[in-house]
Length: 330
Image 1 (tube, rainbow, N blue to C red):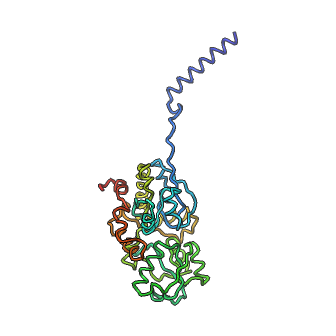
Image 2 (image 1 turned 45 degrees about the vertical axis):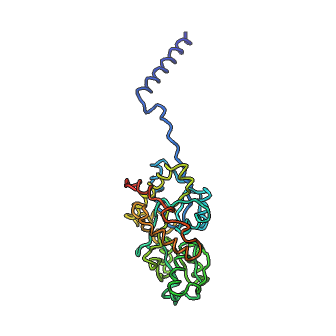
């Protein structure tokens, strides 16, 4: 008898549970969420709106998740994208051009940062008591750059050439993070620094600015684009589209909220927010014209790094993802 009662009670409880579950959908098993698509991305040392977008959760809204792979030396970012070790990066245009000339297949997918008078890409700094007042004083001086083959070398070389000093300086490769220290120690005479390093060096009184890269053709060389491999574009164009959509959102937001963007970057990089800035970004991530790429093609031809007509500017970049991100026609 007791056994029968227990059996009936068990059936009743099971039925009640089924009815309760049907009446309360929230308690039923929820459908599995789609997994995020991981984006392999380096912990960039200079200001990058990717940090802003990640902090605000904008990538996750598009089904993406940044997989931070750690810092990669500046000189290795382009090879890392070409080798598919990371998915996207931002470095200066000449590195993309020379990589493609060497057989890599990379494509610029968003214009990224630009040089303005107020927010230049680079600043050329010396000690406060240095006798260096202008570019003419760079003669026979030792200059720190973060790598060869990119903006810190070529933009200054171009300016030196225009002032008859091309062969009268010595370049030495030192990471941005270490340049202030070697400048203080007297190992170099000039430091070529990017944000946020020049803000700190000047803000703390450790160095003073001689000029910025804006002096060369009003910053025509300053585009710091984002690029990826053409293989990734073919394999997963939707991921590229979503990445650029978020990047454009973060870049446009940075242009309107420079101080807040700088604080986010400082937080993510463990930096003192008092001495961190942010760059200005091309509106909607669009490369405004072929000039921004052609400037570099012409320079690299003069430097003997490219052959004339070896690369066409129109083949190096696409605005299709950036314009799609803001609902514009190509």
